[in-house]
Image (cartoon, rainbow over all chains, first blue to last red; front, side):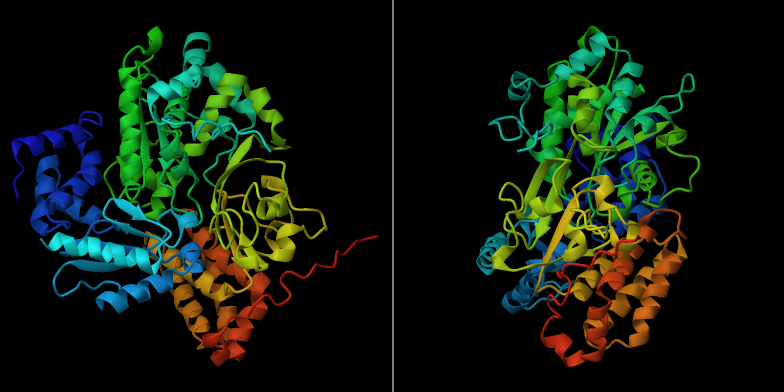
Length: 162
Length: 452
């Protein structure tokens, strides 16, 4: 993994948010960026590269990458459905959404479809309790889910094949 | 209709942008503070206002500010906690999404009071689009000279940066948040030293919730005394309540702290009653960590008084018969909901979010999750209920940070008030799989015991 000059400039911009010598603080923002550039997950190579960019040791990166749930340490599908299942979403039928995705795609939480298009994950409270049930897809939220809305999201994801 | 101090302008078209926000009277507090007040005077107004931390603990904000150490030549920091992750809570997101400049305005005043030249917003990573809204608003404020060097010719320099988290409830705990901001795992620190003495990068730091800092704007504009006139007793001002669960109108409401819980649930101005014509069974009024109450104790205190939406009234009766205001995450459950199952989802949440530093929390949350799942699935024993009680007692108070307490309290309260329902799951395992226990006596008015 090696960033272009343009990407390196974006990394410098992230590091500039912190005082001189505190560049390690940019680690989480940097890992979000590296993950996005690396097809949605953090390989060992990607994490080592992040360490190199911040002049810290690889173990400092692994420690962090393994702690936070938004970092994927294995390859993921092109579209990741992260269905919230905590209390308030459960009260509004999140179990039914997970079951419906299984019915449509044959994947259970933690699994990816054979064509590599979809990954299903369950998530803990995403702060959208008033708009339940909901799921996160990449950087956006899809709220007040119904079967029809899930159908449309699956269609949307299939278009990414091309 | 109560007065609104924070969300009054939230739905003015274009209010996300500086020009519209300014035209609507925005950034007046920055002009007032920087041009006519000393930093200590700003802190003094916040003290007078009686503003209490809106993240959950309810600690007086002005007092927290006055604890900040001010050694010569050492930078000080303001960090805004926008890690909003407490189940049931989505108020800060709403505020930042609709009226981001209010937070930035409050941050400039607070940074001036505290002497922070570089302030941070730590926002949960999942709120990525909100981060982008904030970054755009910050850039607009910079362009308008409200941030940067020598703001409004006052000689005060300040810039604000947004730092995303990456999915960890524990980072809402202030010392875990600081660890995370330093690029580390979110393991809470041992206290003391408190952040006011040794916080971000070892420097004196104040960490405040989004809503708390936003409330500084009306406090500076109108004065602390005016702010303190709103509300009831020590619950001054307005509070954002995020209402969810089985209600007709879930959403974020700004309330003046002088209305009853009953009005909040049933009035069309707020939740609009229980959805689908059902009856109220239970409610967790302050985010998942605070005790759940059955309908009867929710609407009236054990003394028979109407329960009000204030810090004091919600906690009336202590944990035996009361609960807490917490973060204002108001979770309502109708008669068809199962308290055991709901408690199980919360136990699973806390197991998932435990950082693993302290064994009572790391091990105990896993045990509670497993036992609750067994009971929910009709595989529990009567002794499991006592075992659950025993485990939560052994977590509470025995951990570095309050996540342990937060995990213990929902389980304790569920057993305390809904023991019948737990026992029914054990004695009727096949029924427990096919139907719920229902409303039982949970809404039946309680007898008020009066002592002579």
